[in-house]
Length: 404
Image (cartoon, rainbow, N blue to C red; front, side, top):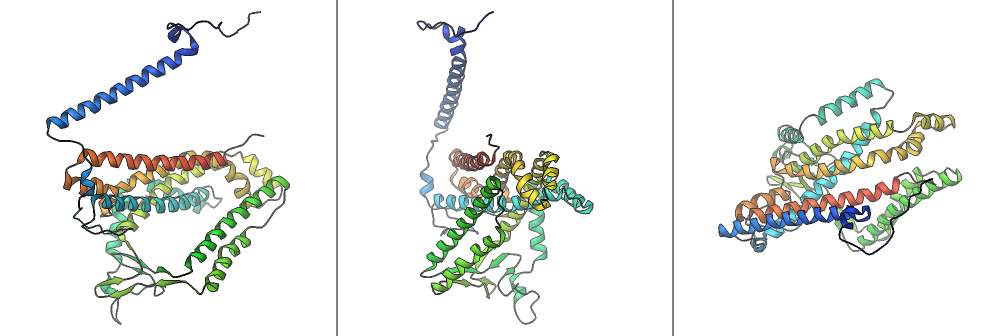
């Protein structure tokens, strides 16, 4: 009978880098890495030589110069005399805002549509199928322009809210939906408001802790602990008590029509809303298919076994099907989040000033620093993509199947 063993150890020879299987793969990897480094070095050297021949040099000093242009939607203080760096930060925050809102809404809609696509109701199932096929087969830019055009054509202008014979009225005397944008009340934080916010955040943490404890009790001891009403109580009661104990330190500033426009409150431009809605409903169509595929990947015997134990359909979905389907849903869901974030660069089509519109648009045109601006754009989108992937991979590792 023949036996296999490691080759005898001896003095190292250069020929072993090719002939010895213990070192051959490392040799090929090193050679590939060396060729890659040399290729990148050549491209960099060629770039520097061409710039020098054209009398140009790479410099980022322009970021400290006054921008000289206004931005219509800002989350931080900004004027036309602010620096290009400040304008870039406004664009970064605007991009992150629409990406964050879009990911949340797309997930909610996508999960709901994905579950309803498997409904026993034929009408609901077909309606969800029509939604998926329509929205995912039309370019997202078209949906952005369509929604923006609807807002401009259908919604009233601020002047239509004026007078007793006004053509439009505010919703609940607090919200105004106009062709320029949406107005809503803004919170006003007074002394002691930090305590209320801290209590509210602690309540949110308590809800997650309660649900985690209930899940462990169910899986380990078979004990069913109700979580719906305790979660609702934790969400409202502690914060309301803290609000009144601290003397109601948080108020609301309502939008009011002054002159030719509304003043006060929170203002969201229709370009932001159109971009948000379009990215959400477009990406939700893909997420719905991921959810449907994940649910179908779970063996039907799992559902039948749970039903034979007397579990209700909603509990079967929440406790049996979805936990197993998440292993299939999460990986493609990461790609959808990344696509939504990168598709936000289409914001300039409706005048929403994201990073592509500020740093990659006006700043680039004014300064002529194309290489510097494009490099910064690439670094930003690469960074945010890596952060999203890292966070979602952490969650994916938390929900993956754990062998006993």
